[in-house]
Image (cartoon, rainbow, N blue to C red; front, side, top):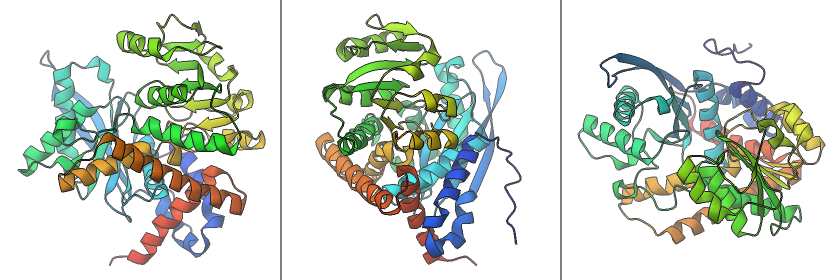
Length: 425
């Protein structure tokens, strides 16, 4: 009997959900007897669409569409961020939730995968409007979130303040202070030290290990970074501290290039002052598409999904791609990079540093005992290095890419949990 595709989503050939489904199909030959459960991975457990009406500052009532998708909960409560972006769709959130399932299993965290979002341009809202929207969204999805059910976190255009509003709203609605309902909170509300830069640190740690495999010396290595928010900027700073040269950066304000490397001590204050890299004087501003032609050793796509297309994969000069973003490489580009001998450290392991420290925050909230930043960084590095080693061993054993190996390790863990729990009723 053929299983029918999901009727409520009609993805295009390069859509995030299509990309995810293709990645799952590629891992089936390595799942053994667990392959009988593979349809579990192709269907989200629960998808909630909510209307978010708020009163704007001028008295007008505006409506926004919000989502929370729980892809798989076999290994634990849902875990995944919330993004505010004008291009958010149900299909995108489904894919991001699915990647969270894989990511959490890849680093062996006791979480399932979830994701949320609101289709909105947050820059068009005042701070008070943003707060009202966040609180109404939290109330609407409150029926499926909770410290032991589903734990949101920051993502694109969300931050600790938004997590504080979410935590407070949930707490008011349940009549208890529930710090563990979200992660990525302000420190004094139960947030964890090291959380802000954790994803970028994970990109650096996995990149450092991959560079060793390639005999690529980080001292003097040329690095290009797309997206310069928390992830891209933190990774760039760590690579620069290791002696690498940041030769190209692209963000929403433009693309800058300096073949000699940029002075991070000057760039970072400029970034805070002007809200982007476009105004930085220590580099040449070039056309955005020229970013993909820059001579570099390491490329870090840390913006949105679908950025490395087949055409860009053919032009890429890097030896190593570190996926700081979720789903930045489409499957056709993946094949081209593999054929060209370009090593890709996939998102589902490369950017797992953020959710790992989110797990640390969740644990600390339950125990009300908090760790130092050094302790957190040491624990993070140990988990990331250990997870990458298992994935690399799997890749070597089956002679497959790191992406397929990551999916093989993660999907085996998810489907083993599914099989052992059985079907109810």
